[in-house]
Length: 78
Image (cartoon, rainbow, N blue to C red; front, side, top):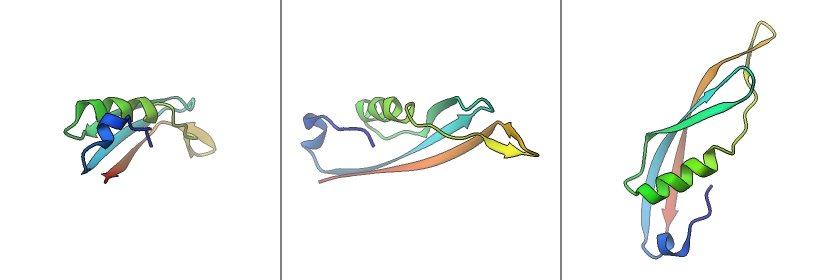
């Protein structure tokens, strides 16, 4: 989860984003928010954090293959 700056913690809110990961056979990823939150700053922080995530590629017949993964991210700031 991203570290939220103080000004994003001032208000209480709940938000859900859905990130779509394209995981390539060589283990590299591309990520985009298929369902962003309503806060552009929160979306930018989330993408910055998610771009650092690492995955092992899916395997098929003993060989790495490209795959896709959707991840729901919940924020509950109170």
